[in-house]
Image 1 (cartoon, one colour):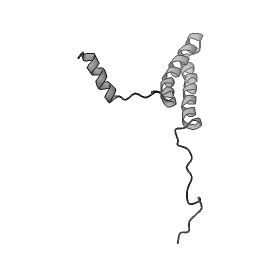
Image 2 (spheres, one colour):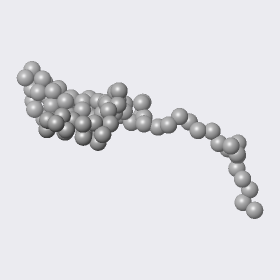
Image 3 (cartoon, rainbow, N blue to C red):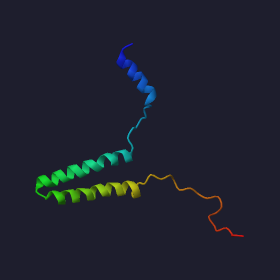
Image 4 (cartoon, rainbow, N blue to C red):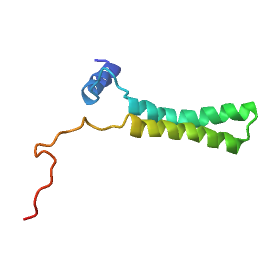
Length: 91
């Protein structure tokens, strides 16, 4: 048995594969440094000062984080309560 084949078979059991390995949140985590670096570099090449370019790029990165947290938040569906949601007496 070849060594690479053995490693591949071992990894097959250790790292189960899913159909879609990346989720929306993985993409957001990857886009944060890309937007910071890419937009800042682009603005610097265009002629914007570096400190201003980084500040403007960070606004886009914060927008990505805000979208991931508040617009498409990682929460389960709303759950319903069985008690009707009313107040219960203290005594």
